[in-house]
Length: 506
Image 1 (cartoon, helix red, strand yellow):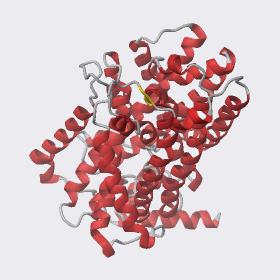
Image 2 (cartoon, helix red, strand yellow; image 1 turned 135 degrees about the vertical axis):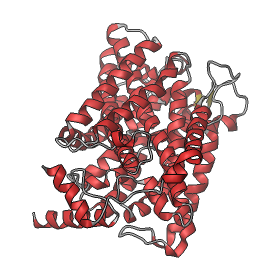
Image 3 (tube, helix red, strand yellow; image 1 turned 45 degrees about the vertical axis):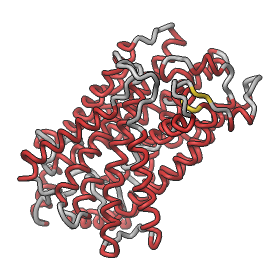
């Protein structure tokens, strides 16, 4: 008990030094911090909801080989982020990092990093719960014959977001417990799915098919182009690990637990996800038929074709629960980012979104703003069949730009950067510049069209979402915010911070 009290005191002192009161309840262990990021990465969500995209955009060779390549490059990004997180363990995360690391124009760097992070966080929440809605729809189709009309998927999507909002508002203890359970659910779930698919089906694809077969159903004639845009499956899955940074104000020993949560969530996902993708690809029975299933229903059809109706539906339930865990954690992390950004006055109506529920000590209004914007991002599915791919692209671009801007600023600081207890030593520059170059590449790739010929119905609207956010943030900055936004605000003196904490504890 004495160790826990010492750690808590140290964490509070660090937070006070950074200018903030301990408003959120600090009850997460290092494992729980890792669990949030691992749950949001969710290999059972990202890998399988975009699996049909991979089947048509590169096929088995793309699915299997892009995963380790993208995973290693993602690890560079995560390592660079973790080093900065160790120095600044606050819920603001990336935009706070940018403000502290920019030698000049800190508020502007912070402002745009925060808005990219906002865009990416909302989009990844939309992508996760949108994918869960598709998978639930596929299960209902198998069980009850329910169709795949876009309005049905959107209705399920809205219900899933509602449940996740309610859990985060009223069940924060349950959310923390489910995050821990989610880690084992994902690991055991992958092992169960792979083992069943390895031993039950009478037929498996050849090793040559799994590792070398290339498929291009995009309409584009350039195989190289298809390989590049096919990286989306893996890169979208490797998102959301900044959650460990956003949860540091609720984590014990945050200066080391946060960075470790970021890095370990990527490493564990890298190995477990590759096993899952290889296992599912070996189990494909009727490639052409399964690849043409509605949206994200291809894995469901693969399970049913390989195992029969009952076995397929049981595996699908494992995936659905994993996706629900994932979406729940994404709403948690998203709301903490909104809470912190609002705490510093950067979001219109900040006084509303920053409000903390005294009973639950959660940012209730920020939770519902996160869920509401996620719902809006999913609505284009009503008329655009490529909407899900666009949502995932928006998530990747928004998040990764926000991920790498603090790294770029840290590299500019050189030796003057004040390292925390967790750092990369002499490898900081190699890791950091590799991360920056990689993010520049993928930010261009995922705004490119995915299907040819390009029509109004299949146009990749990612570029519009990115331009709207840049335009809004840019105009808002030029017209108003540059006059008053000074970056992250300190909440007061040590006495004033203590008063805030006493008021919340009443």
